[in-house]
Amino acid sequence: MTTKMTIEPEQQFSITELSAMFNLTPRALRFYETKQLISPQRIGSRRVYSKRDKGRLALVVLGKNVGFSLDEIKEMLDLYDLRDGQKTQLKLTSKKFRAQIQKLVEQKKQIQNAIEQLSHLCDQVENAIDGRDGPVKLTETTSAR
Image (cartoon, rainbow, N blue to C red):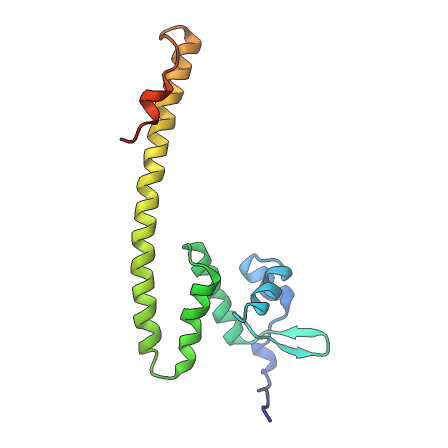
């Protein structure tokens, strides 16, 4: 038989409070609960979130903001429960962070290339409108640089 620890009132948070703290909808919190990222206690039909849930939610939001999937975030968070001084969690997290940095650097290059192409096309279109150039040449700007 498992017993749930009771949460001290000063460390309890309602779904409304956590939603406001993290600028999320209650629906998002319930979704994160179904994904087992947070696990509030139930008091009747009310969800009561602990300080641990609040901390996990902060990490979920941070992870989402830097491009991690919920499955990746859950994998990193669940390693905390191993009780090995967080070594396994920290090693995996560091590895995932480095891989994400590389992915974001590549995306940044692709975005910069797209910006350059669009800027060049804007110049061509505006010049064509003003009658300064001939027709817009899409093939010259859409090739890989």
